[in-house]
Length: 429
Image (cartoon, rainbow, N blue to C red; front, side, top):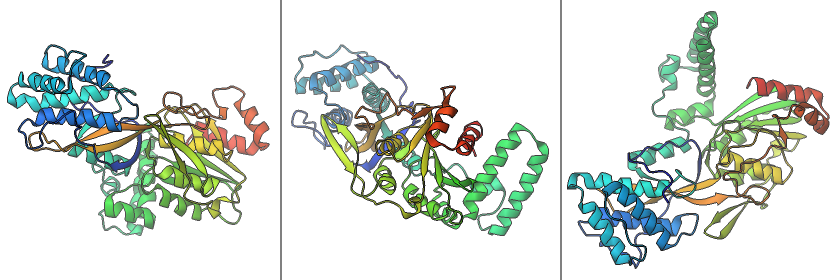
């Protein structure tokens, strides 16, 4: 049954991402569905290609009968036609789609086609994760994963030209901060945080270069909480995250060197899963089994292609902070470090968003426009072999427990460290 029927196309909101690679072949049609590529019947061929791609690329094996039933229910809803017989042949299924779409005026057939496809995809489990993307929406997805926000201009937000010198940026920052501090309002406090972020991006040579060249914003921020405690805020898993991580670790103090490290991934929505085995290798070592993807009955193991990062070797304790908004790649990374006892997870259970989505281009066009299938291709498994999806990753120490500080003190044998943790949970650095 269709759990959720959408009558408006492209009501899409991505609050969590776990994307592995990007473009793969959709697989085209199958021998059973033979709509010609040079046919003027593009809407029918479009839906047949969606059907074939789901069969080939969806994470869970689904038989033709169940999938045709899903298409039938969606088509009935959109085109108000009679349902397809469950015993229909591939040719009858094709004719059903063609006849249903023919009930719509020509000008409405594209929208009806997209609505049918979107309804089917939205109702594949996990519900609401798979979609049809236009070229513009696929670009938005790529920008999100790459941590690019075309609508935001850091220079304009600070009030300086793009060719401003580091000195001009610092001066303008101090002027605005002075004014905002005098206001003392909650809005001013939020603006101060925004300007502090902008200053950090535009006065760090490597971060500024990435932003100037492609508007890529950083995903990692370093702070020193005490001589013995370094703090990394890891906000997203993007293609630049690995390089950023190496750069940040190289900036860790050396005299005295911190003994402990907090990696704060509260609110981390994930992003590119390609980064996870590399980042995991920095902590657990080279060529070690990290995690599995599960697709249509097959487990695909991933090993770490990187070795331990020298800058991390002197650390005594590594603590990962997670919460209910920690998702996807962040959950997978946390699970790997938990499995190898390389980090202690503290916070609350993570969101449980454990799907891998890939994009699969569709060769059939609608009114000359191209579309891409955004499809859940695999699911991820946590350290105990159970799916992350719907379960999340459990913290080693749950701050919902009123005695969590005592538990942490007993574990770490360091009351000063626990006090820093308490402060970090009350006020993010």
